[in-house]
Length: 89
View 1 (cartoon, one colour):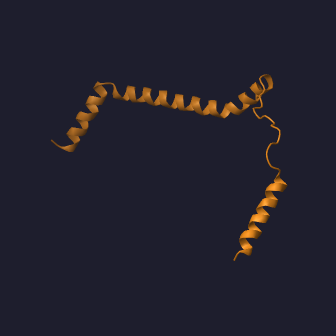
View 2 (spheres, rainbow, N blue to C red):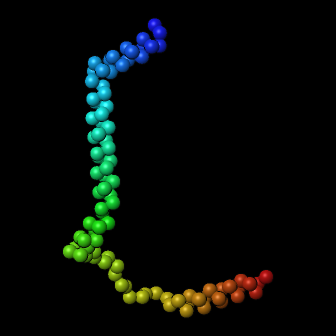
View 3 (cartoon, rainbow, N blue to C red):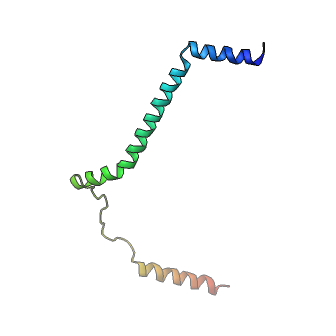
């Protein structure tokens, strides 16, 4: 069996099973879906800016009163510790 006969048999079976039509339909569905996704992603920032006007984003940050040791005290302790360790050399 020559290569041309195998090729012709393959094309005949694709044609008989409507392979070209199914391939075209699959490509059409795939590219339509990908195009829809790409357009949706590109329009999302505009949609969210419009939506933010009507439903503003809530702030989840809470201002807590400062508790614990002041920064100056921590700095003084660090300086004293450093000078104590460095003088022991």
